[in-house]
Image (cartoon, rainbow, N blue to C red; front, side, top):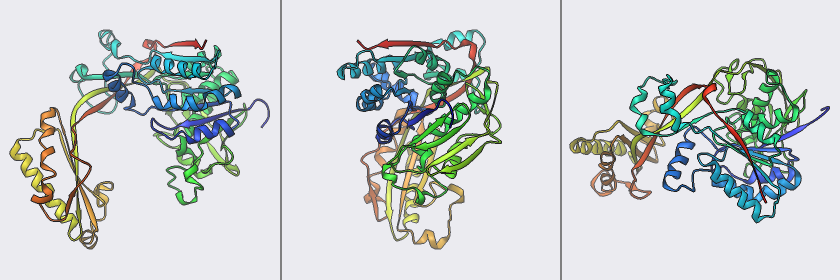
Length: 457
């Protein structure tokens, strides 16, 4: 490749991901940047619930552990780190990073952070201005969830992250930045692409899209041929290498994993509903004529990505309290395992009817038979008759906690009071709060984001 070359690693695919590949990339990835995605759709609601219990919580503490391991080496090598690990407590995460940097003597370390994606407190005022918060996935009355909202966070793009980098940030922490924006931001910063350079912005977004799921872009969860992935116990995560002209996906040396045309294509199409219109906060991407070509060992060239004008509206993800759930398990052994499990489910439902259970949802699954494949699972009589074991799973969702509690004491007695061969495991079931998701759009113009820098003394 000619000219300036930037290498970005995808260090995390979700909150709870392994740190191994990120650590390896800092040591052997020859990176300029590493971006770590920690947020899924409901992650922020879970973080908000943690923060409600403990004001010091609400961010991905795993990220602080990672910074403690690789922060100093990354700083000394000039590798900048970007992450949305701030979740619902960005300043809390910044405070923890500052303490970690101070402990390691990183005087002058600049921590950039972006606030303003948390829109919960602004909803009443925005509603008064005429916003209707219409659910974009299904019908519903927003007024029915207004008093149950846990969090409301807007998906924002690369611009406030770039602002942090322009101020010299060594690490940038955000809340609900769009996953791919974490990767586009350093590319925009390095190459100076114009706001209307849609094709290059789209290239940056797809570089991020190929990296944002961590190991999934390097042979993890590889449906094409998972047996072909070497050393999955040492799975390396993908690295994007870009110039003004070209884009490659590769990985660090001396690690497991696979970068192939097939593995990249699987990740390329992940969560893309319309290849001609993959809409992000930064640009509308067209990959309907994109090319992915193997160009060497663990090296794939990506080309012909086009971009179009970004949308005027941004996605607002609202999490709300949607009741309670309880799920329980009973396993049954051969012979007639499925028949026994069905009979046990029938017993439980009759008991629930006598208790007057008021449930919003009841779900009965038979793990090992049809819990994953549902109606398309094979129900061949010979197969069903000879199953070695079946696990009965019963789950209910209720509006009141007391209703969900009605199921709990009825499970373990079935070991002695029901069909033979049952075993109860996992301890007594616990009732859990259910978080619902209300996705909607809001105008970009009402979002107020602010970029900040804190320098470690």
